[in-house]
Each structure stands twice: as structure tokens, then as C-alpha cells.
Image (cartoon, rainbow, N blue to C red; front, side, top):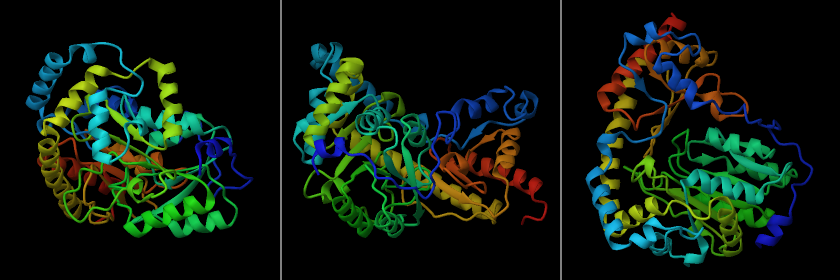
Length: 418
């Protein structure tokens, strides 16, 4: 499938399984509303006095805590970047990104540099791709559940969304195939293949191959959104769909250094067909002339020096400990909870018994100084009895305490709960 054909296409008349459109104000909640609860503002009726009695614990945000960030190595990388290439670091660059970083990424993914674009975080890479390809009424496949900011971005573009349920080994490709056979004609399928946000599951190898077959047969593009791939701490990894796509025109790949270096560095990237990347580079020039050369030059030094490997190893060790603490605490304090234990990444998806009111549970937890994210934020429909826990940002003892408080709120709402 060529980029020109892809760009010219429009989705055929088809009623998605969940034919809702997302407005910019629905489908995903505001981080600030959660943070306001812990800051003592009135959010969902939570007062400062109610929260002040507790140590605040956030199980809501997928970010590493400062103690597992390689601060000294980042400082040394910045010093080298400033000394060795001040002209490239401090001046405007090209929209493609910092050349030495592109060189490292090209070697990592075994692609030509002109198939790469480095951006200000992977969310900007996502936004550029969506803006380049999606027009109002275009059909886009999303996982159910999926990242809330993806729903917002596609909603702003007035895309029609075909939500396909997740299973323990990733998106239900059988359900997708059935929808395609029934007439669905998506332009794009957004897939988070490794340690999915929010569900924590990983796409199996067979499903990766089947998705590529479906993309070729039904002429749509797979967007492999993969910021967590390096954070596997058990089990066997699978090839990227980017690598399995022998034709080189079925998959666009995105990843980020926010999860492996630090969130504040704001460096992400896209790999894709040459014509598509050329067009998005032009969009980048028109948006900001060039991305952040200072940040990208620091990341380039961090990667070329090998510090990235040490950083990933340290983050994985900490995340494994925090994942284990989360699962253990849920087993002890919330035996009603059902979840798939993730083999890596930042997140764990919890299902409570049908009829559980997680919106009320969120308020009860906030009154006890604990934040998590409701399942409804990640779905077009459903999720009222589900929640996402991010275990990356707090040490194990705080995870234990946080889940104990959530369980206390749950028992208050469900007096018969175990």
C-alpha cells in the first residue's frame, strides 16, 4: 500500500461496533482534576482537611520516580553534548531531528535515516501521524481499552472509532477480522503491542503476524505505538511488527525515551514509509522549524555512551519489584480484584465485580490521599467496574499503603466485600 493511496482513501460506509464519536471533552479525563484532589482543591467533593490526614500516594501516572532516573549519567551526557557539539546542540536543527540521534536510531531499527523522525515526545509523533492521515469520518481501529490521550486526539480529528476488545494476549484479531469481513474499512489501526496502556497485556507473535496479514488484505496502516517495549522484566519478547512487515509499507512505528531515560527529556520518534515520513517532516518544519535540539543531543550522548542500557536495567529492576508489590497487595487487601499480571511496563488493569462503582471508589480513595484512573477513561463504552493502577512512580511500601487505603474505601462502598 503506497502512501498516496493511503492518503487518498476514505473509510467505506460502515457502522462501528461502538459508533460513538469522542469530543475533546469526553473519552479521557483531565490529569489536573486528579492532581487537584491531592493538592487540596475541591475535586469530586474532596476537601483539603480530608486529604491532609494522609500521605499522598499517586497510583495514577505512568512515570518513573526520581530515584530510578540516571541523573548523574544524564548530567554527564549533557556536559559532553555541550562541549563536543555546541553548534548542533544550541542552534535550530532540521525537522527530522538531531543527526546523531537519528544515526543511533537508524542502526537500532536497521532502517535508512530518511525513514525516521525524532520529535518532542512520542505524543507529538502520534499527533503528527494522526493529523497527516486522518480526516473527519475516517475509520480508525482502537483497542478497548486504550490510552485515553489517543481517544482525545482522534476525537478532535472527528474520526469514527472501531473499538476492538483486548484479550490477555492483545487485541482480539478474530473480532477485527469479523468486522473487516462485514465491511469495516479502517484507514489506520492503533496498537500498543507491549505492556499495553492501560491493560498491561502484550500482543502475541501469532497476533502480530495476523494483524499484518489483515492490513495487507484490507489496505490499512498499522500504527505500532511502542513506548514500553524495553521494559520487559520477565518472559520472552517478540519481534516488532515493524520488523515483521517485509514490505515496509504496512507499519508505522513510534517509541519514546520518556520511559527509559526520563519523562522530562520529551524525546520520541517515528519510523515509517519514506514518503509518509517526508510529508510529516514538512509538517514538523511548519509547526516548530525543528524539535528540541538540546534534549535530543543529550539523549544521543546518553545512547551512544551505553548509559541507556544501564538505565533500562535499573528501571526494569525497580519496576519488577513494584509490580510484585502491587500484585501482592491486591491479593491481600482486595481479593475481589481480577487482573492479568504484566510481564513488564508501568500498568496493571483491575476488574472488580460487576456492579462495583469505581467512580465512587475513586472519590473514596482520593479522600484517603490515593489516586488511580477509572476504567471508563480508557473506553468508549463500559469500564464502570474497572481501574488502572500505575505502579512505576512510588516505592513498594507506598504501593502497599495505597492499595490498603483503596481497599478500605472499597469495603466502605461494599460492606459485604471480603
